[in-house]
Length: 432
Image 1 (cartoon, rainbow, N blue to C red):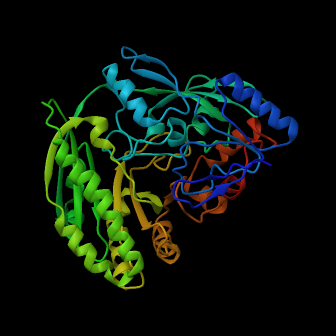
Image 2 (image 1 turned 135 degrees about the horizontal axis):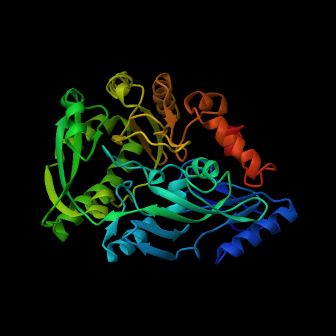
């Protein structure tokens, strides 16, 4: 047994694998998979550990992609980039900027590995631009028999459609080719707005902005809205001091200390939320897209997020507010609401439907189970799909009702990994 103990970023799960390895190439990944097969060991590849589920946990061979970080090619004319699986998104953004290109959309943090983010369905918010997996046009994978395969919409299309958001269940992703567009600026406009007004104006706010999201502060009627729109510029970024004050000191240092206090004295939460939400001031700035999309998140928390049909989001949020207003829970973290267009990725949470994402959080160490359970019941009542990397209690019996292509995806899995070389307890639950 190895002495290595691997844990998720939030401390929700840990693994003590039999062996670990950090391959330097696709060929070394293939050799490691073949070696594990000879020993009868299951294999999982981890990323940065930002999933809250046990999706990466194994007691067999745990592969780390820390040496698989090369940018293999950037082709601005073709609008593509090919990168290795372990490259952090923040480093990808820097490399793309050097070539004058960018991702069309991304999530709100950028410390995950490219493969880990894509495989678990990481997304941002957008009217027309979808999640990361919808921007993937090719995958290089090591299959259970140690073979290396490249797949795309034209080459091994069923494997491609199943494995883009594949949870590592179809093979070890070693490289990805993503679509990129010419680098662009975003004008960011952030301002408080009453929740009732947001819900009333939601169709307009979604239609009028390239990227819209908002954060609702439980125990209040207050939100902070974010509208990001493509602009010709010029760039007018936040000053270094303003960026530090808002995004480092207030949003991380002070927020963490406030949550520590609320964890000790839960009765303070409603009052603290009222003060926190009113303390936010409007701001506007223009910067490179990836600097606007992503921010630093140092405060540790646990999270559950569901993708629900967009037409149900107003009713769902009103029900969520009713649950909080009953007084059974003390929720110090804002509820985050984002949007995505329908996509064609078989296991994407936005597959074939306009989607609203509702994410609920609890500060690390605070009781979350009953709050998450109450909200999960609301989300599932409208056919919600849980984020694959965030906490939920769904199993295959539920998931096959909300994913019309799940059966086809699992048939591909039976073909490429019949002996479940890449299986673990989480995949047993969600895939059967």
